Length: 205
DNA sequence: CTGGGGATCGAG
DNA sequence: TCGATCCCCAGG
Image 1: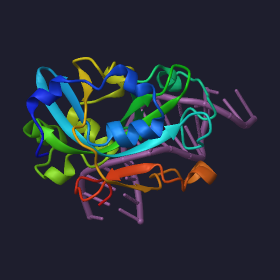
Image 2: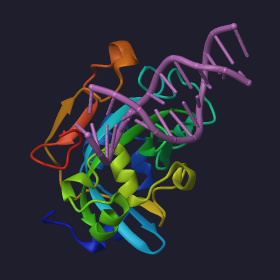
Image 3: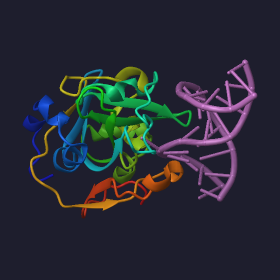
Image 4: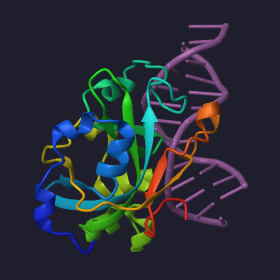
């Protein structure tokens, strides 16, 4: 946070960076990067503190396993650098960053942010004042930034509607099992959830 | 802990 | 066509 500046949010993570190894992208590029939205002229942004990696070819927790192309999963097969947003549980949206080359259905689910810009607007959208409750969950952060499957699935993340600005330092992180995937058999305990150490903006307490 | 809420997709 | 299930959250 100390290094944050509004100038930074004008930058974009370069497109070619999204085609590297999904785990490298998640840990080195996406942790600490800034997720930004500008909706009806209102800028909101948060620093990514927690995320999970999903691999379409082998990972039983992934919507696209085993490389299953459906209407819903189609965006995951696109070239890295666009958003995969889906609607769940009748009322929530979840935001993922599509990674890897075209044809490879890998994605990084963003699970928590540290609110940075547009906090007033986030409080209004979330109907709460409490900072720690604005963006500490995949459904919450979509609500806070105004992200919906309808409006944002497939959106290019180097554009001006919904985008990612690069991190400006490396963060130490923990690696633990992912949330809510009890059905994924041998993949349910893989430590593919990563979160920044010593940051209080983390999902699930 | 409980239950809401709607899309998804595979079974029949 | 139907319905169990789903990468969740607010409230009690």
